[in-house]
Length: 339
Image (cartoon, rainbow, N blue to C red; front, side, top):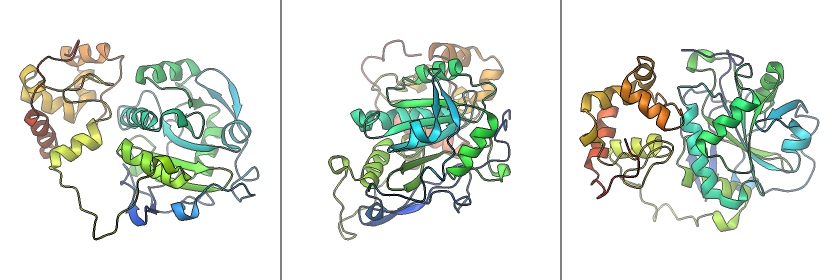
């Protein structure tokens, strides 16, 4: 697959265990796994330890490189002075030509941004850093942000290759085991509060509502936090495998009967597409598009040229997702312009 690009040889710190609402909850496993923080990178803290406090910390001006980066709006900024100092942030790695997990990460973060509402750009700032600065110019990043409907308070960043490598390393987002990833980076969302020096790694593919609640607890936002329950009161949710996969892998881009999102509403999809075509498209969408399949090409053009990501699902998993979608009652009227 194309693109180990600038970050060839890089993988990312995996999601850490941390205490949430009084219960230890492991973050969802990422695409590849590195279980220890990289070098002196900021380490994850529990919410009980992580209430933002304004005091000198190890993870300050003497630690973060104050390199110059460029935003998707063409503005020059400094990593520490302009982006981190005095702020709470959520950061991930991506590149615009990714056909793997990047589209899913970005779509998921758009839903997370909606969950957090006005806090984004006020109480927390989102930063997506490209791993392909050669291709991802500010103009390309701007077009990418517009495709996904990114709102205020979220910057896409590029810069010199060596500076981007250094930033990823210092944030604990780089590791020399590229063989474990398909595109040289992992689906990690690093959340941190610079004044307190507290950082935690999360899966960028986690359910947006759960991520919003987890981040709110970590950063001490009471109005978004959910009261904890005891072990005796807690009940494990029951999901069919297809339902779980749809909600964790597909729901950021699609709905079933609630209208188009990044991609089309899937209500009634079984009546519009042959099962064999659906199976192949879900399993290897990049190959179907590359082969010039007319339906795939039409969908690609219609939905702002956002690429369907390869989710790495096996045949049984694809069958489970499709069966779940088919089991949902179709809406009375198809969503506007649904294909």
